[in-house]
Image: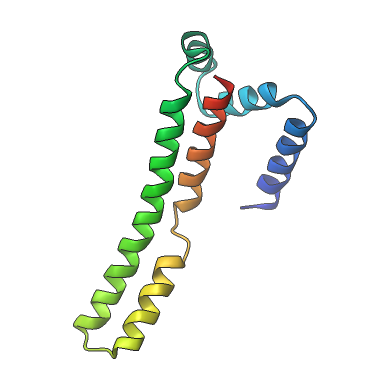
Length: 121
């Protein structure tokens, strides 16, 4: 995350804590979707749909976690196929399963965005 992104996140959190939560969520949402889409979502789903947003957000986060496990397993299997000692396989598997994926941050942001939208709606 860049310094500018961090500063933006800090400002958004400060606004949320300061009581402008709905306005902050709406402002962030229209950075990523058309204002018409956001308005239609809010109008049509007011008071309902939160569970669906939460379930999809959880699925994204669980999928990210599972993907880390798959990457680790593949690295471990590759070292096994190369005949490397078991301790090297385990080490590489654990390391690979914990290294951030190039798009992992974006998945987490999308999930958090869904959660915020669900709370707003």
